[in-house]
Image (cartoon, rainbow, N blue to C red):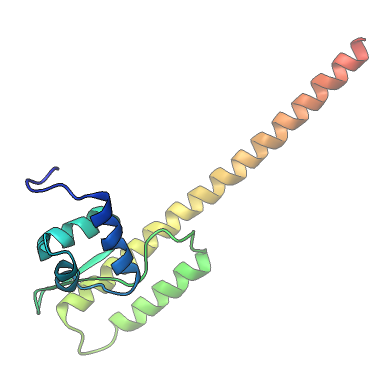
Length: 149
């Protein structure tokens, strides 16, 4: 969905990413560094750039997580660590509704990721078997050509 308004320049996008990577994760502060952009525009651009954005409904603040997405695959062990941590945290008393919702979403995402990772590992295994079979077939064909000569 294209929103009305001024298109972002490559320079603005790079500045936004650089500021974010330097640790400025509050959309209001980022908007101050980009004078032609509102807090809402910055929020939407971060989201579209794949940077995880968290909205604090109580304070009506928009912030982003300090960890960029997509930095390699997590192992099953890492997913289990995340699940255990989230499950332990969700069992604590005194958490507000937003934090409980965040933890539940994290648990659901971790479970989904683990399922996808398992499928991916199986696909890699199948691909390796196919490559091995292809090499064997090539060797057999080569041997047959040699024998025919």
